[in-house]
Amino acid sequence: MADDRWIIVGLGNPGPEYAGTRHNVGQMVLALLAERMGARFKSNRTRNDIAEGRLAGQPATLARPHSYMNLSGGPVAALLGFYKTPPERTVVLHDELDVPFGAVRLKLGGGDNGHNGLRSITASLGTRDYYRVRFGIGRPPGRMDAANFVLRDFSAAERKELPFALDRCADAVETLITKGLTEAQNLYHTDPPE
Image 1 (cartoon, rainbow, N blue to C red):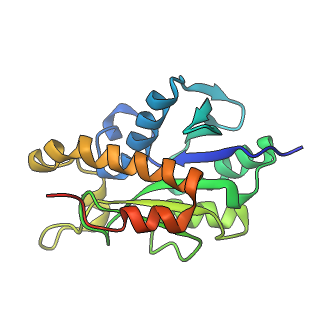
Image 2 (cartoon, rainbow, N blue to C red):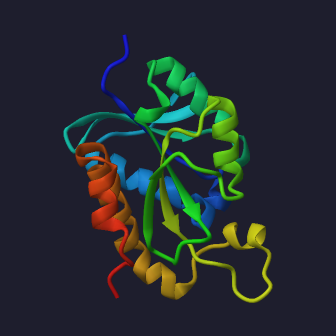
């Protein structure tokens, strides 16, 4: 029997060499949410590290797939099967090149916009109908390849702003699961405060 649980997935790559990179910002927000829940991550047979508890009063499971970003779909599908949770009770946190640094955008469904983690999840779930909370990382400078840019650490200037931006993104997730998509979009689809 499925409950009213939310599954919140933070995308990223495993290993300390990727921990601070732009591509792992979904996992950074997830760590902040776990802190807010007072929950610890533990390994689960679905090939995810999970933390369970209540987030903003809602039953929630936070998940970090053990796989690399481009193969996130298998662990995410296994987790939804394990909890018997429908895709529309699933939130995926990820980096987004086409959103200015620190800005947050939320949506339900839609394309993957070239994001291989989303492409893998959509293929494994057989649907695009899950929530996405997109953390803006901006475009690479000059002619830098996007694939190289996402695997780099944040700049010194960005690192100063990062805690505030991560906090705002975590607030957006809480608003999404308690008040719905429209309210979350109305509150957070503004550019971050200067």
